[in-house]
View 1 (cartoon, rainbow, N blue to C red):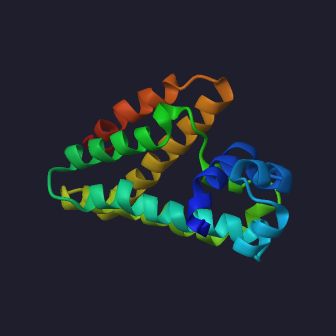
View 2 (cartoon, rainbow, N blue to C red; view 1 turned 120 degrees about the horizontal axis):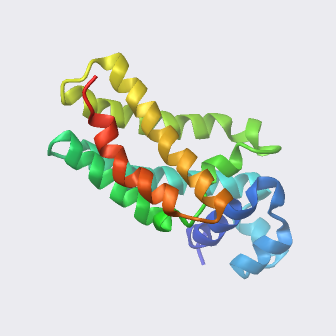
Length: 182
């Protein structure tokens, strides 16, 4: 079995428990690999596992978000498609965000630059759509940040409340909010 085959259960573990809360026992149980096999696939241990998951997340961001935002069509349509795909990726707000989980505890400094790069790609892609629609560059960048804040904040709120409705509401309203006139 390849290293990539273990990404989905690792993603779920790190989303749910964060870096510090994921133990070798949990990893072994989720992947079906013993300790020796885990270190065979991931000689760098948990750090390499997270790096592998972040690489997969970057590829997912490319497919789910960036391709949609770079496609043809008007800004509201592309932003709606992005929101629909994000909603599906997060099971309508029922799955927590890996990036938020990694910014807690000891992983914060280790993975900060990778998380920053992913967030920056996302913000820039939203801003580009808005600039193409005629929005001034600084405002478009601010709206890109606001969009990511809204999505990430709604995911955290949905997890904290045990209720995905705030996330679903944000996803529905976000394209309109991002494109609203000054």
